[in-house]
Length: 62
Image 1 (tube, helix red, strand yellow):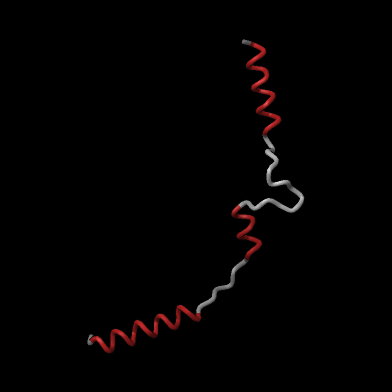
Image 2 (cartoon, helix red, strand yellow):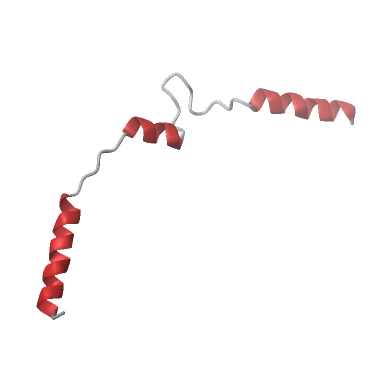
């Protein structure tokens, strides 16, 4: 294949890729990435109380 035909093919593919815009389900993507809901505080550790209780028990036994 000559350089002209090769360049034309690459240009055609580049135009197709530039115009391609797939449908994105942002809510599913948000769930998959684990983004917290508006009702949840991003800085609250759900397991902090459980681990704190375990740590206190270890120190009391020692």
